[in-house]
Image (tube, rainbow, N blue to C red; front, side):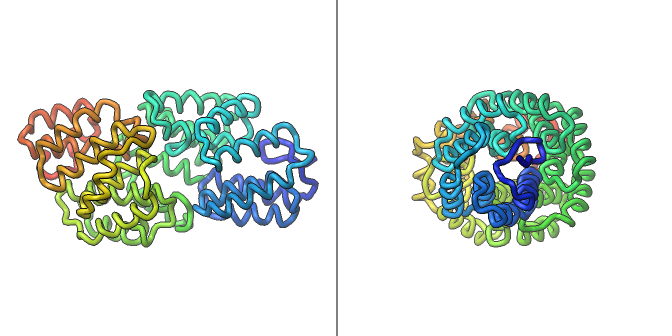
Amino acid sequence: MLADQYGLPLTTSVPEARDAYVSGIDHILAATFGASDAFAAAVAADPGFALGHVGLARARMYDTDMPGAQKAMATARDCATQLTQREAAHLTVFELLLQGRISETRRAVQDHVADYPRDVLVAQICTNIFGLIGMSGEPGRESLQLAYTTQLFDALGEDWWIMSVHGQALCEVGQLDEAMSMMERSLALNNVNANASHFKAHTLYEQGAGEAGRAYLADWIADYDERSVLHGHLSWHRALWALEQEDEAELWGIYGDAIAPAASHSMPVNVLTDAAALLYRAEIAGLDVAPELWSDLSDYASRFFPNPGMSFADIHSALAYAMAGDGDRLATLAETQSGFAADLVRPVARTWGAIARQDWTAALQYLTPTMADHARLGGSRAQRDLLELTYLNLLLKSGHAEEAHRTIMARRPVFSHAAPVAGFA
C-alpha cells in the first residue's frame, strides 16, 4: 500500500495518483495555487481513490466552488470501499464540514487528531485564523488555538507546515520571539510556504517593524501566484504598511490591483474584511476614500454574505453598508441574533451607523462595551485593530485626547507613538 508524505497509508495502488495527492496536500498547507489541479490529476490517475476525491472537495471549498465540492464528496463516498479506519474517519470529517455541522466537525477533528496527528488535511481544519477554533466565538479562543497547535507540533516536530501555524498561534498570544523563530525555521525548510510568510508578516506587525515588514513582503510576494488564496491578504498587509508610512500612491495601487473585489482572487471572507478594514483605516488616517469604493464593497457584501451568521464578516459588512448609506441592510445587522458573536455584532453595527452620521458620542457609547472581549468576533490582532483604531479615533473626536493616549498605551502599545489616526501625535 502506498503512503502520503506523512507516512499514512493510502488506498490506491497507482503511484501517479499518490504523487498528485501529495502535491495537492502541499498546495493546501502552503496556500499556493494548484491544489484543485493536483487532486484532479490524482483522481484521473485512479478514479476509485476516495481520499483523492476528498482532497478535491477541500480544494474546491477554497476555490469557493461549493457545488464542485459537494460533487467530489459524493464521488468519494461512492468510492469508499475497503478503506482503512483512518481514511474512513477522514472522509466522515469532511462530510460533516460540507454539511455545515460546525460543532460536530470540530469535535470530530479533535478526536481524529488525537489518534492520527499526522493526518494534516484533517488537522488543518482547526488551525489558522479562520479555522474552526479561530472562528468559534469562544472566550479564550487564542489560548485554545495555541493548545491545539502545541499538540500537533509535539507530534510533527520540525515540519514546515506545523511550524507556520504553531507560530501564528504563538504570535496571537504575544509570544513574538518564539513565533518569529518558528516562521524562520519553517521558511528555511520551504520558502514558498505562504502561511509562514503571512505569519512572519503578522509577527513583524506586532513588533512594530513596519519598514522591515514592508520590504520583506514586497520581495516575497513577487514570486507568489496572484491566483493563490493568500495573495489578496498579503497585499492587505503591504497596503497597511504603505498607509502607516504615508505612501498613498502605493496604498491605492495595491488596493486596486489585489484587494478590491474586482481584483482579488481570495476567499470572499478575506475580500470583504480586507477591503472594508483598509478603506476605513485609510479614512481615519485622514485620506479621502472614493464613495464608489464603498458602494462596490456594499454590493459585494450583500451578494456573498446576504444573511447574518459569520460574525467576523458581519461587522465588516455592516461597515460597508454604513459607509455606502445602505441603511436597510445595516439595520438587519444591528438587530441580528445569528452568529457565534451576534451580541457583539449588534453594537458594532450601530457604531458604524453612528459614525456614518458623525455622531461620535453615540458611536463611542456603542463601541466601548465591545472592547473588553472583541477577540470573540474572530480575526487576528492585526485585523481587530480596525476596532482598536476606531475606538482611538472616537475618543479623539469626542474630545478625550488624554484618555485616547492612555488607552492606546494600555491596549495596543505598538501604536503608542505613531498610530495611523488623524490628529493623534
